Length: 338
Length: 249
Image 1 (cartoon, each protein chain N blue to C red):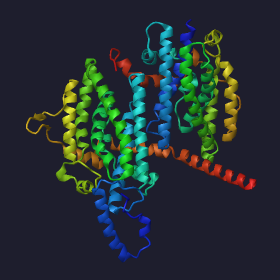
Image 2 (cartoon, each protein chain N blue to C red):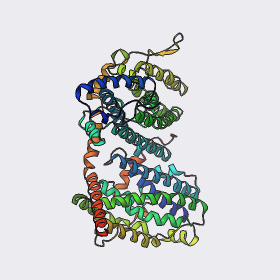
Image 3 (cartoon, helix red, strand yellow):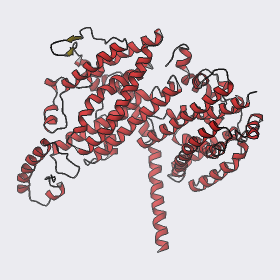
Image 4 (cartoon, rainbow over the protein chains, first blue to last red):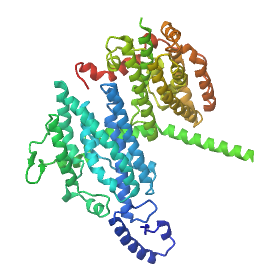
């Protein structure tokens, strides 16, 4: 089927009164189009709120990839074997790559990467709150891969079917890499859990610290999730926060048991009737505190990003100045040749 | 003395120290593309280090593997060129260090690809593809920074002035390297200097950088005499295997 949505540039040719009526008509057609599982592409007309929602979500996602490089990058220099060092470097480099695709996907909605990054650096834009927790031991590289990337995949696989084409396509590749990251994280944990007493303790300690922040990654409970309903209607979001959280817990608990680690939740129990695990209360006050900027590492993470950006200013300026000089020299030589 | 072991350690330690330091840029580069590039180059260096150190361990014949050699040697047992242990500094310092090394690595790997030892030749052939790409990257940045703004020109010129005296080890010839060359499995580093000089001259010209006045070269890395920086680098790198000597990771 041909995309019935009019390119947004055409609309500017009409007076306001017609525009309003046309927009209402377009909105209906847009909603029907999205409901029929078709993809919206960058040049298609889309409601402003849809565009804004996507810009917010994709840029937050990109920022999360970039800030997420810091807690893991932290251990590259101390990886305990050369093989682990190589794997960790490859993994963190993948996260940078995800940041790049996502900033590019965001640019298709009409915003510039540098402006988006400026919003991150000023503290205006959010990123995943999980990266405001510290990575204290090598086992955190296992826990982050296993739990944080595991939770991210749970959130992200449905986004491969998101109604916005560039985001959906970026997510296909991101998810392939994330699923590899999750397996390498679990493999680190498994190795530690089968290792010396010190290593086992390190693994259990990492699980204790990362479990609750990981299950908070799915966001507030469904009855308190302000953006969810509209995102579901627009096929940006496919499953509710609580559904995804439950799915993650059901999948992860047996993995912990398999390697002999204990989930730090005294209330956790299997419910035969529902076929799901029941979990204890989540400390939403902590979640809100960390989001509000008062987690253990919020200030360090933003300071590190700002420092990298500020320290690199002279490099970016040099690259720009050199490109201009080259272009000017080329133009001059073309003129001379003509 | 086991010349083969010593020679392979030199190759492995150069790559290891560069890889270790490039990894520190991950998440801290001036632009996202450079986070990716520097980490990727560092990853190649770690890959090369693993291959050379594994081969070195085998040549030594006492059962030491890549990790024993990387994590359980003290600084005086390291055989890397002093250039490779110079600190990252700012982006220009890292680029100059990498460029000076890449301009040497390209002819080195080309020479080693002709080795009469099948394993050395195979590792060198793979490394040659990587070092050609690394040189393209570092050379392009030498030119961008040298022929960029007044500030970038001054900064990268200063980096060059500071780092150029540390290249001496790269071309250090002794009994180890002459054995390698005469037996046909290695190359004499002194013979790589002309190719390195040609790349340097061509790049400095394109970058509008001045070759600093000749200064006495700092040497000693091939013999285990290092700068203060190495011990700090190793303390960080080796912390886990040293703290938990019985652990497998």
